[in-house]
Image (cartoon, rainbow, N blue to C red; front, side, top):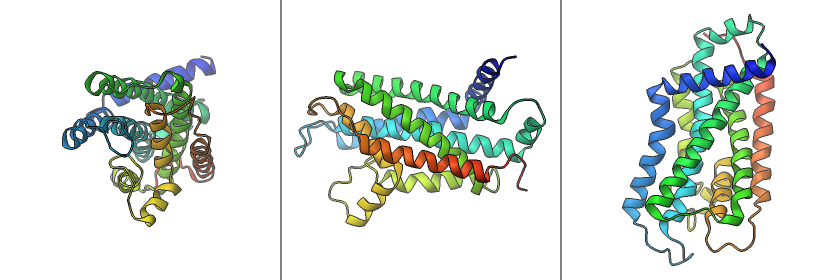
Length: 255
């Protein structure tokens, strides 16, 4: 089998494992939709006086950011730790499969999930709340999704280096992202938040992903949105994740 064929096979294997995991399906696919419906039901879909946009225009890109983090960061981290501690990765290293093919299959599967969740969230936003991606913003949306998916896939593999067991992986990954959702324009806008909370959100990549996605849904934006600063921050975090993974990633169980 060629390397490309191995990569396709590994991608299918990861997607099949995801489909057969009810927990992964719920947290990656179902939970973001639940959050979208809950928040738009609680706060309504009225026009925000400060921006002139409707509430759903804020929540659709925020929930899309949450879905992307779940598909690329949390899913990759938890699955990788489970395979490492169960000995699957150790056995895989004894086969002719190159390490980059395994990592590439994991990233490719995450990209497929990203495309699926993007279509699902945008479709629900359009059908249920009349939220649309601005036509001129489609290239910006694609770049944001690509850069964000790559960055969080790298961070998902990097966080496995500090997860001691498969039982600890869900707790550690949720501990990393859940507090940041509240200071990163995902659950609630950070306007009016204390300065220290705003600074925390500015440091970490989730806010930059949410803000870059929000630009593509803003009906009042002029021209083609090019949030280069947010792409740069996401890229820096992605490079950091790659460096940590290359240096500390383990193929053998820690326990």
